[in-house]
Length: 191
Image 1: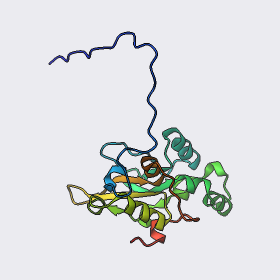
Image 2: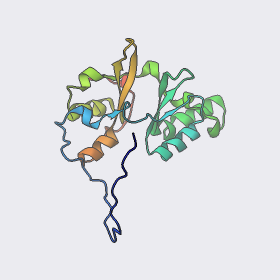
Image 3: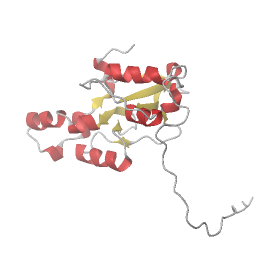
Image 4: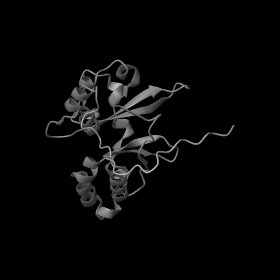
């Protein structure tokens, strides 16, 4: 069936350009947590191979405008996550010194947090949670990001979403801070 063309507005002349709003209208700390979750069924995840160099991972983060990548192995299974803190922190220096390699030879696998050490939120819990609970959990764990998992149709778990503290701050229109030292969910107990 052929589609009809959309009508056009001729000669629009001088016109303003929309700008992003500071806070997404209606999003508060009491809002449903799903409003601030990046749903990977709607937005493609930013992914990289654990065998890519750390420098390429950083360049890809800059290109995509993200601060975390999911590292997927050759079977497209989560091998870990890598963040800008992993890249710009002390890990690369320690790896380079310990292995006596150049900074440019460091791989994602060398500095990422492996999947075995990751903890996540269950989508069923997130569905009834509030934004404030997500913020409190991220701050308590001293993490900028968290993953959300769900059971797949075959019973296996899959990553369904991602929370980003900086994205939540943008949506709320407020600054959100972490305690001084970041660490993994595996190293911090969640409520």
